[in-house]
Length: 493
Image (cartoon, rainbow, N blue to C red; front, side, top):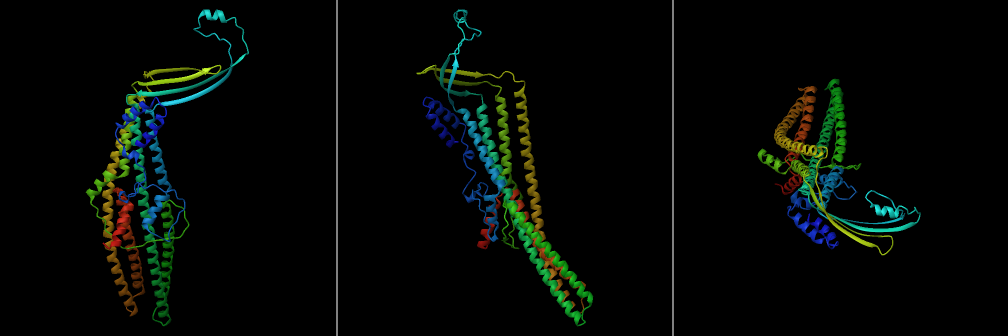
């Protein structure tokens, strides 16, 4: 706000005689209270503040490394995602509305000039004294023309409006805060979506590796079955069964590879980029447990979640709009002044005038009544929206914690299952080699091992995705949390 007024005061000072009124106006507005958030840009450089306030860059070139990390993917999202850029520009546009509202406190000065080439025949109009008519009515019409020059300066200043101007300023400030918070929440959602898409792609890459391992196992089984069939130690059924198993494994591998391609498209879309570049992502089956304290996370979300803050500021903006329409029942007081030069010839003759105006609303077809009622209902709707959001936040965090705990239990269960499947395959393979086991039992053991490998991968990345959802719903910064995990991994803690 201070920057805005320094510019406005500089222009007013050039007007000379109105500088004192502008100075008094600036002092009046300073009494409205500072607004740090309205003066602060959406961009920020402190990493401690998270990524909520990072603004997109103006770079148009997109460079994706061959091995993309999660932090790099999030940075690409901040720099290039059109939805985030749209929300940032919307907030910046709403910030200018504050200046528009503040302009109502400033004097409005206009200047004009005109030239007419016209005739000067006398025209009788109501109110002309009779003796003038008697003297001029006999004057014949003429096509004789004259030059007429005119220049003017007009100054208007609103003095008092019983709260109309201040409510407009406050409404604009709250609307700007709301849109800025909405931009922050958009970024949080985008970064959370990127993390989910990134983990999904990493999961599918590991599932491809698991499918390849299964294909290699069934190839080895087929070779063993064919060799034993040739020496009469295995039946033809064993060979056919091995071929069927290998074909099914190859089909599963094709599906897994297709899932990787689809997941990469989803990640590109989450980052807001269009790229045909081939890249891979980091895969890791290790994970760090997330401390999910329900009470602390709910308190954090209700305090810091940008979408809730946006709803609160929107409610305040609607309340100021309601107060504005209440003030429109009151009169407004202003001042006018003009300075003109006009004549048929040079030098021009000057005239000046000053005056005061008062505008009193009397009746407008009940327009103001309906506008006030509409504003009241809008405020009530905003309060309901805020309360509904609070209820939804609490429910979402509780559900996220349940999902996270369930995902943790799935990890433990699938790891046990994988150990059991490996041991089962070892026993089935040993029995088959000595001729006391069946090919069906061996096939089932290999299928169980393949399924266990996939379930471990899905369980670990299911936990990571559930963690990302909880981080978002708790109002935490996804990029800051990812950076903290990375730092802990590098420090080995």
